[in-house]
Image 1: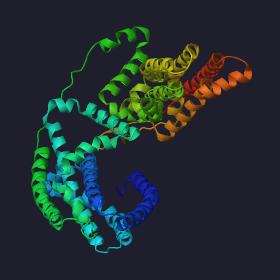
Image 2: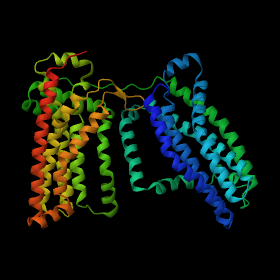
Image 3: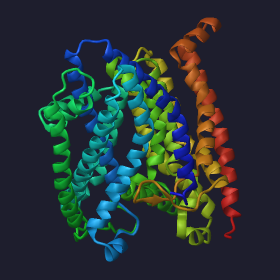
Image 4: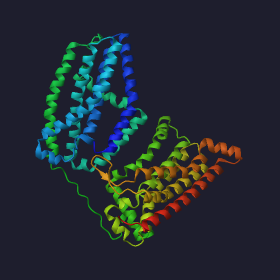
Length: 516
């Protein structure tokens, strides 16, 4: 971590951003203590039990995710296993996670515990709460590791799960963001809570509340300590065995058949008849890279975040407003140009010298990368825009004008990205996940391209806006269709001009590019 300056800066920034929330949490704990001191005791014990069950679910969930994504993939694990046993490795990893979580516990957790005890007027609550938090971590983190090891062992031994791993991760990510934007965590976690409530996990609430005088059971409090000791023993044996199965397993091997044909894949034969052979070769290579390593294109999904809010609103209300088609136009244009055109030179990798020595490389690279994204995304953007537009309050002529905007902008956006990508290339691979590295566009090129797309699309977005478009139509005495069509023409002209200039710059720099 010390060698990764970017990660250290990100952690420092996250710590600074969390500081106000942490202070607010400590003050909230003080208010909660005062509320407990002045309330009836009957429901408080149930709330305490519920709070610690949900807290245990949180620790297991995020601890298991970190174990799967980070902790269980230490650098040079093969070398580690030749010097120490797998028990030492898994033990060290679990202790490292416990130390990381304890750093937060010993700072914010301790302060919140003291504040709560002062507010409740019971100093005996401080050791009880701190002990409960420690036991929560001592059971939750190993439980998360056990779940993560079980999932990874299943993936290592099942050929079907290995093939569907990317699909499962994609579905998990979509489901996670859907829960965030729909705020449906309660409906998902409630069945888990009902399953854990009758277990000893529920006893942590009694241990935490034993000093508050709200009817907590001392027997259940002692049972929570005993349960933790028994759980740690069982967890240690389980972690050792699961780690042994994972790290010493041969695993399944997935072999991919390579399609061989003179003109590329048979599914691209029609396209090969339309495009020149060099341009078609670039398009085919881009699509094959995307199919074989879709995670390397994950950066292009960031523009889709802007669709989350309008989409959730449409789902919750059951109605599609006038804004959703506009967001689709912007997002589709954004993605189409960023997929392959933002790093024309850099993504060639080790093949760059051979590519530059080919005949007219500037034409094939620039046009090919611009077409790769347009041919994939433009049809989807147009269909989605027209479909949502027809279901919205927009009139049919306005939807037609918006569909033309979607077609032109998503088709031309790749040409806009080529000049920016060549001007600010990235040649080194960066980590797109814990175990995957890929050459992706530079952050500056992506930011500059995003601004350019927004400026180009702004006229059509303003003209087709339900509020602004009608207002302009009323002031000028024309229909909203005329305003929308004018916005489409302005955006199309600007996009084509910017695209031509960008392509000229890209072709000039590629043709004059020198290695070293």
